[in-house]
Length: 161
Image (cartoon, rainbow, N blue to C red; front, side, top):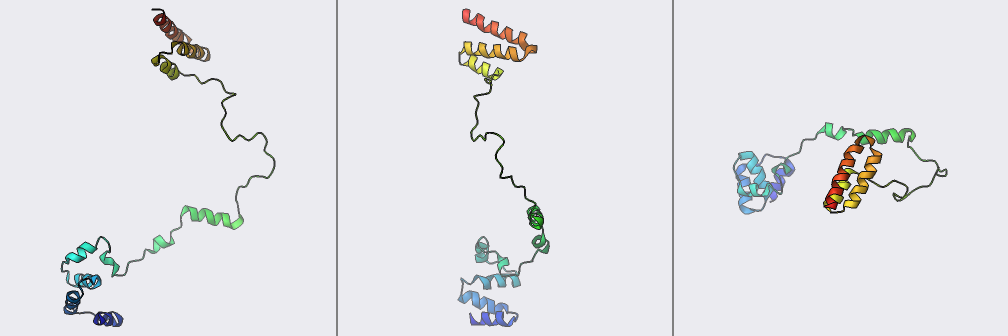
């Protein structure tokens, strides 16, 4: 172990024989295995197993991507813009113009009607509700009133039979 530390401290090239001795004496010493594999190209099963947890590149210096470090994102640009003169949009502290609603309300709205709703009523056997929906649709859509009148007549005939 001290030989290995001395080689690292003095930055002397280590001999492969020394690496072999280190691996034989300390089989758990993965750094020696990685360096030996890098110098010799010799396959090492333990390095392959450890590669999933600790890549071999951990022993080598990693390249630094200067462009990625100096990349300015859109959020950075917006933050810098806002810091210059504080161009934030802030609401006035004045009173609200009207009533502020916190929940939706359908009380003032007309009843919701659609052909799909009428068909659902028909499928459920609620013929009277379907006829009411078709009558409302006929009033709302005058261009299709003949079509809706035909549907209403068909439903009423089924009811009478």
